[in-house]
Amino acid sequence: MIVHRLRLQTIRLHYTLRKISPRPQWRHYSSFAPPAAHQGSTTTSFVARATSQLDQIAPKIEIRADQIEVLEGPKEFYETLKQKIRAANNRIYISTLYIGKTQHELISTIHEALAKAPDLKVSILTDALRGTREDPEPSCASLLASLLTDFPDQVEVRMYHTPNLTGLRKRFIPKRINEGWGLQHIKLYGIDNEVILSGANLSSDYFTNRQDRYHVFSSKR
Image (cartoon, rainbow, N blue to C red; front, side):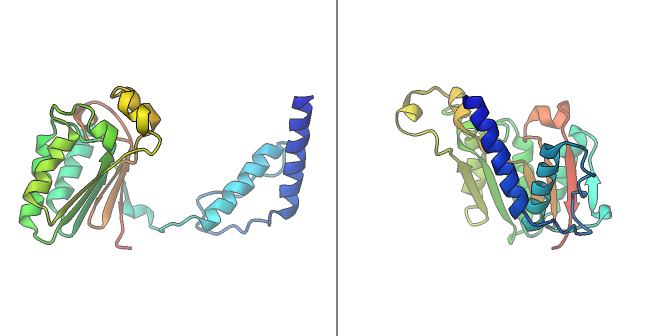
């Protein structure tokens, strides 16, 4: 009886959405193609229409294909990242789960860029739980502290802490396990007018033998 009612509610909801949903207007630069002709799958048709409508209102920046570069592997990713940091003039913004506690070369590269360009601003976002997992031993947090000490007016470091871990849970759940309550997982590396989108964190395995995806977008917009 419960299953029958759920199915009936689903059918009614789908019928209502079909009546009120406007026919999508496809733009030439949309990232999605119009849905294929009806082949009996109402679920696919509904998802296609919903996705199209979200595409209509989602913020976007249009760029040409020649403004996108795909990097092949972890070593190229690391060398490209360091090269672009060294050449930075205005801004560096980094979002990652964590920076490996032994990544002194990467921190030194950022340090050199800051010393060379007094107007350069660096913003770094990591996760608070993962970034302090090893505390009071060396950690991501202690590694970044040197940049704040040496360049207090040029560097901003923020560590996201999930609101789901508070009170007694925060007090008694051990480290590493507490990360199951939520992490900041965005991997985005921006330097001046370029952005590298990836799934790679900034640690040794991601710079040597752990394959991921790396797309470099260049635009002044």
